[in-house]
Amino acid sequence: MTVQPLARPGPCAADWHWQLRHRIRSVAQLVARFPALGASAAGIAAAADKFPLAITPYYAGLIRRPDDADPLFRLAVPQAAEIAEHTFQSLDPMDEGTHTPVPGLIRRYGDRALLLVSSTCATYCRHCDRKRIAGQHEGALTPAQFRRAVDWIARHEEIHDVILSGGDPLTLGDAALRTMLAALRAIPHVEIIRIHSRTPVTLPQRITPGLARMLRRFQPLWINSQFNHPRELTPAACAALARLADAGCPLGNQAVLLRGVNDSADVLEELFRGLVRNRVRPYYLFQCELVRGVEHFRVPTARGLAIMAELRRRLSNLALPIYVLDTPGAGKIPLTPGTILAASARRLKLRGPNGQSAVYPEPR
Ligand SMILES: *Cc1c(COP(=O)(O)O)cnc(C)c1O
Ligand code: SF4
Image (cartoon, rainbow, N blue to C red; front, top):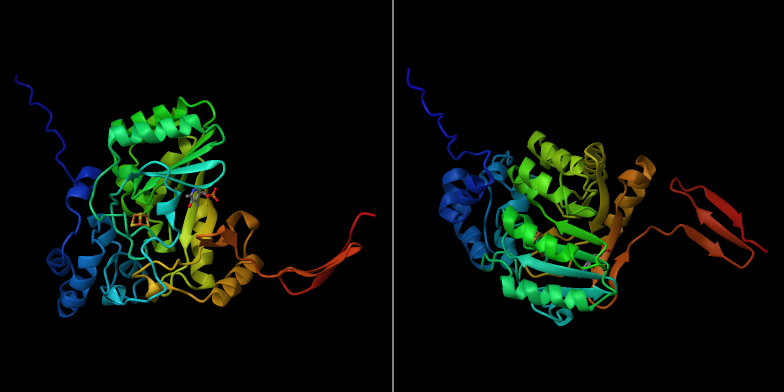
């Protein structure tokens, strides 16, 4: 009897390489997927010309309606509004370029350094604050550039926390990541490594058991993702988060407050509850920056503060991120509704989340 060799599983939607290769990358592919967009193709093309377009088949499958009333459509599909120019907007609002001692390394805080290890993302967010880097050409830090960055960190003993960012570091393969993580782990003063990746949202297939096994060897390794809407917490995304948490990675989420996507207490409550249920701590809620091409996403800070005040009434602190504005001169500044009504050397007068006041006598 002859034994049939086992058929090798072919490339398919469950494979992250397949997902990357089959991304929607052109307006023609977009219109083929969503024929209703034919009429607005010119505006989409003008925007995609300026800021790159890529959507994984997985993420495209989460879009329910091809118009910008659908929050996931808004997050991923270019819109003509992106090409409106506003004089106060910049491609590098945080002035990261001037905080770059060696190529690919940004240092804006004393004890932390951020490495732009890849300029590729699985899906390009329309609200991206690094539009000057993400997808302008799809590449990665070269081994020589990475070596220079690692040497710089090794010479700076005050750096205790290194963040792999981009672009999206998890668009790199396991071997390249392992090399980077091993080089950083070999530096004694690097206590914490973080990976900032949106792949749990747009390419959960990337979080393979093999990747999780590899990451486990480099603890303490924190992973921050960017879920912006509760519909992004699909069974596939939740399974990816579970794999990372089971590998010992503390998980965080850095959402962005975006008009027409999540600028409501109900949507954010559902998002933050869903994240905590999946062992993800909501870490930051970012106020939109003054980056070119995102004006249509900006929400007034008064509205952001009102939403946060409402969420504080509804949610445990475990589910509450810090609402923060990143500024070029002063770094990240928390935006918090005022709780201190009056302060003297004798006593502090406070206002609680539901409006009641409280008094705390100071020590003598
Ligand atoms: C935001 C940021 C960090 C990390 O800041 P945390 O508040 O510690 O999360 C580090 N480096 C740069 C350049 C940043 O923009
Ligand atoms: S994943 Fe991050 S870097 Fe990439 S497009 Fe989205 S916000 Fe920008």
